Length: 127
Image 1: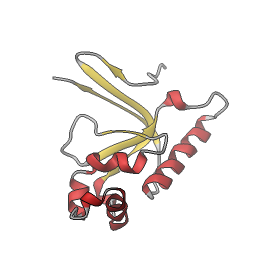
Image 2: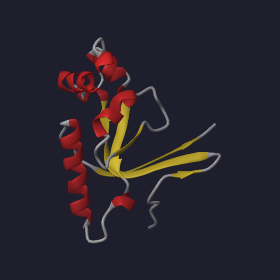
Image 3: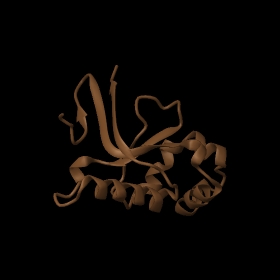
């Protein structure tokens, strides 16, 4: 079996391949809202519903100092975000279980959400 280890783009399609998980916007809490407001004082009027409905706009604030990458997949409508680490960032001496554990810990550390992680490969057609 072959895996693509990084982003692949051309004029017709895009792929996102990571060890990671889907973050459903319903997992976003008041604690996340407080974090966003601390990061950007201009967002003091932001509500929890606003944050959940536009989580992809704010996810960078949570993961900016981590190895995590994100995608919204092919649809902005679901208010879900894919979070993970590209396989190309896996160290040569790291086992797959170690890598999986690292991804899980980074998601817990950056988002304060306990999740199970696995291989995610999303591909969508551009236009």
